[in-house]
Length: 362
Image (cartoon, rainbow, N blue to C red; front, side, top):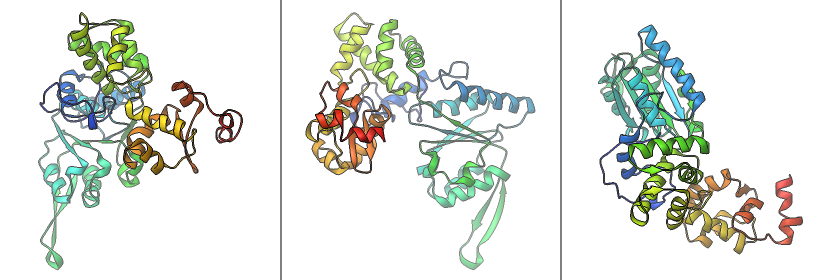
């Protein structure tokens, strides 16, 4: 229900997730089209993120009572947790139009000046992946956020002239998956900063039930619980899994999603009970079976899996580390006791009694 990215019209049977990963958190065209219909329209419908939602509600109500624009808002967190959805809700709550763009699309200060100069008073500007904006545009944004003014440079060299351009008051909503890459001067200009957390299974069940209702899908409580447990704490993934389970239930059963139907459907799509897919299990299996649980270097592990180093490091490892199945150490990657248990393998004696055990005891 609460997802990111700008909606666009594409078919409902596009390949799932980035690179075909059903449990990938980034949105493809399929997700964007469905999300447009399922997004909540106000804070009352938004599920999860209780602290951020409560704080943001106060900020918006106070702005409406003053009759002015809301403070600039920075939303950080992993993909798929609701940053774009919240930006649209901010615009709806303030009864203002919204302009959507992204950091990578703004490579020159002139690009940003063109956008800012065309904003209407009170308009919400949503800037996704704000940490990827070019440095000249970023420096122009400082003055725009603080003084609602930009200096447009006309000409080049000694004859260049700076023409001040007044801007109407607006609200900037910045979204980032890597808040640490934002320079402090930019972070300090946001009046409100909210960090989006991963969702608890109970919250994801509420997301799934709401989405099922909007998609006209019949699902019982146990079926929703089964899907929620495999959704990696991310509503976007929960929504994607729901649609694939819906297809399975429609073809293989009577269309009703139960725990058994959900488990059987996700087994077909190689998503196990903890949300691991083929790539995740391949990394763990290679680490444990070929290298005895490690430590092993990232490049060696990537070769063993048959994937690029960047794919293992950026796609598979973050979730495995978050689940406590893999650890990064100065000596290399190691499998944790939970990884051995998850794959149903018995660790070698040195892992059980010493050797690697010391890595976890330190």
